[in-house]
Length: 206
Ligand code: MN3
Image (cartoon, rainbow, N blue to C red; front, top):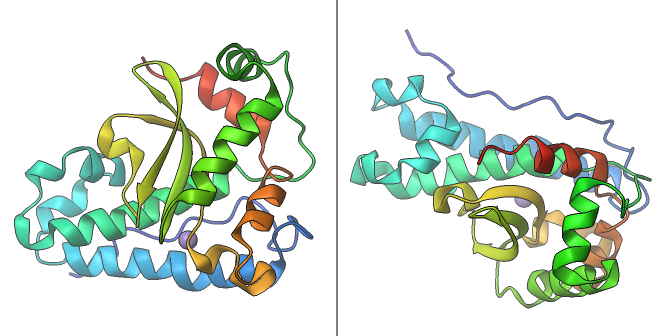
């Protein structure tokens, strides 16, 4: 029996709820077409290896060396695509301000001195990333770092714990922002769910 192992998660918000920073049409196409596409291709890649269908997406991405070589790049691209988008949607919400008194707030200020300093570093990484990929705030050996990954490579394959991610593939912003990635990044700061980021930070596994 063919098993649809992985399914598209349900979006944790209405598609218009991030307006005007991220518009409804962009969310609908990004989620319904691109994200769905990674789910479909992941299932297709795994169809030959039913034993891997029992694994979680996190396991696949953390154990790439155990994935058969003929599908390894497909898993990097598509399990990564599924995981990264699941994570991305999970940290988006409008009108949740950065709270300097939260645990993550204090940690960010300790590392970057000011919130503006953090924004500047994050913006620089997201802006200068060449081609398609992601910029992240992660915990790496329990320390905050801003890193980038190419294509759908995921930070969890490098043993990092994600706290924030911005998708800077053109499909994430082109409909509304056209070629103006910096405008998209600027507005991304209006839709970070800082309560969720704080929860990820305080409940992290060391
Ligand atoms: Mn995307």
